[in-house]
Length: 429
Image (spheres, rainbow, N blue to C red):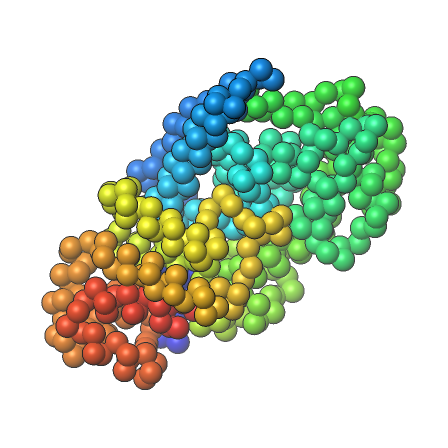
C-alpha cells in the first residue's frame, strides 16, 4: 500500500469516515503522528449534552388515566427522537472521532435498547457512563455497568431478589459482556452470580439505581471457584479481572474495527481499552484487513454525511426524518439494538432488500450535499469526475465495473454521488 492508502485505511476504521482533507493532513503527518492524534482527546465539538428534561414516566401514578398515559408516551417518543438525532449529529461533527466511534462500539457491546428501557434520560446516562469509562481499564467499566439503570431495566435486574433470583443480567454479563461464550463459567456460576446482583432497583423519578438491602442475598456464593459473600461490586471485579475477559473484549474490538477475515494478534489485550485499540490499529495484521469490513449502516450514513458536508441538525425536518427512516429501513437505529447480542456484522448488511433502502438513503444524502462539496466535484472535468468522487468518498480505486456504472452519470453530480455511496467499494472498507 502507498502511504496515502495506509493512512486512509487507518482513518476509515478509526473514524466514522474521513474527509479527503483529513486524509491529506494524515498523509503529510505520517502514520505514527496520525495515530498519536487519534488517541489525543479533544473537545467533542459543537454538540453539548441535550436538555431532555425529566422522564415523563415519573409523572405517572396508579391513578393515571388512559389520556395521561398516552400523553406520557408521546413525550417519551419525542425525547427518544431528540436524543437519537443529537447523537447522530455528534457522530458527524465530533473532532474526537475515535472517541465517538469507540462509544458506538460499547453501545453495541453492552447492547441496551430504549424500546424496553423506555426512557431517553436513562439512555443518555447509559451512554455517558460508557463514554466516561470506555477508554480505561475494564474493572471500573464493568463495576459501573452492573449498577447502570438502563442495563438493569433492560435485563430485568430490578426483578432480581433474594426470594426470586433472576439470572438474566448475570448470564449476559458473563456470556456477552465479559468472559464470552465458553469463557469457563458454569450454570452454577450464573445462579450464584444472580444472587450477587440482587437488591438493585431503578427509581425513574431520580433516574438512578439504588440498593435495597432487604432485597439482597448476603449469603456466601461460589463463583468461578471462589467462595465469598459476593455483591454487585465484588462480582463485577471478579469478572473484570479475569484474563478471559481481557481477551474476549480485545477480540470483540478486533471483530468490529478489523473484521473477521484475519485473526487477531495473540498479544492484543492491553491493560486498558486505549492500549488495546492502539495495538489493534498498529498491528501488521491490521493492514491485511483492508477491503474486508462491511460498514454498519450507521457508519455508512455518518461517514457519508461527514464527507458530503451534511449537518443533520441543519437539515429541514422532512430531510432529517428521511435519513432516520433510512437507518430504520437498514435495521440499525442508534439506541435500538435488536437484542442483547447487539447488531449483526458482515454480509448481513448487504441483502437484496437492504440495497433499495440504501439507494433511497444515498439519494437523500446526495440531495443534501453541501454546495461547496458539490461545486468541487462539478469543477472536475467530466471524464475525471469518477476519480474526483473517489477522492471525495476516500475510496482508493474503483473497479472497472463500478467505473463503467459511474461514468455515464458524470453530468449529473448528485446521481453520481448516490451511485458512489451504494458501490461495493464504498460499502466495504
